[in-house]
Image (cartoon, rainbow, N blue to C red; front, side, top):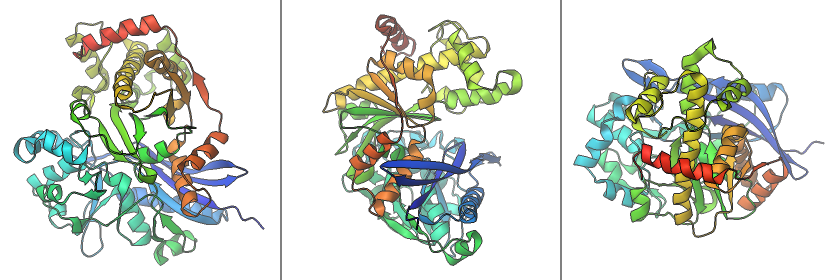
Length: 493
């Protein structure tokens, strides 16, 4: 009789999603992708939305497939990108598709809020969260300001992974790691701050019960059981924020590491026991987000592969479609010819990313990149140098000597950028796993049912399950020279 427990992970990113089945066998974790699908922004009426119903449909499709295969599912967990949310009414219905964090309605909301409601410092001292215009607090403030009808009639506010779990179980919760991205949570108390909620016209009752990763949310409703062919499968709160799940999967052997979750966004940070909220973290705009087992993810958001993804979409079929050729051509372009600050506001959501990169270079008196190879080389060089800048800051904050930088996520397969990152930071880089988010999701479920005891056993199993690729620093003098140039060009000397 097969007693292997299989766990179903839903991993939703800002551009695509997957459903994955995983199990632990012989001290290793095994993953198998079940379905993959796009997650498309919907633009209508000058606003941007996510299609929560399409995402739910894809979750159901994945569950139907595992039922068709006869897989006995022991648990379900959902992780997604941060900050976005769904409004539900008293009748138990969704009041509108959720607004997307890239919607321009927040562009002026943050400045307005900080000018008229709470100062930057007051807000940061409560939440310890990096000030970004799309954080939930500013989205809600923009909606309040616009007298958004869905918000005005909301009974509950559910962050995206919690909304999907509610659609599966009928139970409303507020998972800690995803709530920590909102800039509404006080990491010292572990609860949403009621005074901040009041500033956007909400109260604590608008949110579900706060739960930590590993908590049981409920079981599949009879409706979902009938649709999928599954039984009353438990749905667990994992680290609902995808970065929280990814960091849980860092295959580190000890605490002396930093991580870089590399994907559409790059998130670089360290793991701490307490939130780091002080003058320097405020000045450098670092964030404190919830992790598993009471840890804090002290990190900084960096605009990552978003730059390249947008350029590829603009190039279409006019450039090679395979990454190997695309990147190989980029490596033939001259190094450090053009540098940008990847986090400049002009790259947040420009009408044309190539034009934005060229304009930045033009304004800063640099060579204006021509063709896709020069643009990609500009992106890679600039990202690596930005990583160094953030890494230098992290070294000052850490209470330990950072000996290794773990790169996880899709970007861990990018050999060129990984080597550049090692060169720029001057530290050993270990790349992998690529499926960090799904692994973290699966392993938190495994911990919830008692198959593993803690985060370090989780990480040991993950490390035993894959072959990490190591990169050692090279060309120190060259990278030091161009780091100084990067700081000058970006006005951060």
